[in-house]
Length: 320
Image (cartoon, rainbow, N blue to C red; front, side):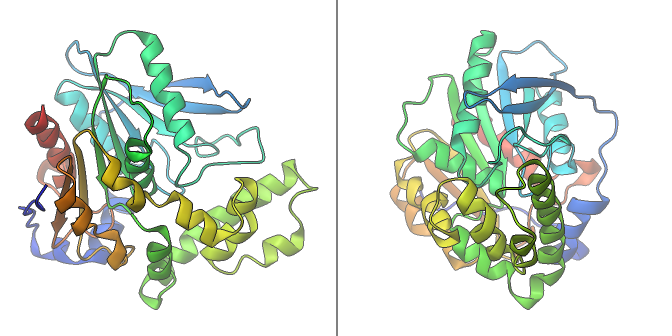
């Protein structure tokens, strides 16, 4: 599918990538919105917390939302998206990835960019409810990588899954990591590291035989965290092996249902390999929109509804 021209043209201030990213991540607030939590058990003995919000009208359509690195289902980009979908006739099931719901998960393992088995468990749970004829998946950043990887891994998707959407997706995880380690992204890297090390200390408390004080001291960069914890806890040789096996880029050619990938040129988290022009041209099911502006999950919109929230709803309506 040819690359889609983007119509996103925000006010002057929001043409600045960092401002867009920071506004969306810290300052934006969503009001008049309620969620109801459900806990489901996973096949390996762990659990996931799901936060549901319900459409203003009776519906057989549901959207699964997946947050990004160290996010949760209460972040404004999730609640804003859920509210927009609810107002347009969709129920929403917002995933909290393992350890991200405010409660430590049970196992030594946690979540990561390629953990599509957890997304599949949520899909299977939704199917058991026997109330939805249409399922859509929308992921942000890490959650976007998980979404597109899931759609392209070659599994037989349930017929109820109609489309997928990825926003600000690090399609090549190593390329994205190299950008995050650059000087321009130091504040973000520090913030991510702070949260991840706190999680690692919690894991050490629960599993002292697996994580030493030295391990924690050796986490200097985000790559160190993936070498010391992510790879070991999830069966990868090291961080680079994890990035290689879990990047969605290699799975994009295999996507066989409509999928929208929306990335901004001024997203400081994304390297050159995160803009899959060739894959989009070769796959009639993959719709790539590269906007000039937007930052990282920072698409601004009037009346507190972002461009990416409106775009997702429009995409679903267009492809069905």
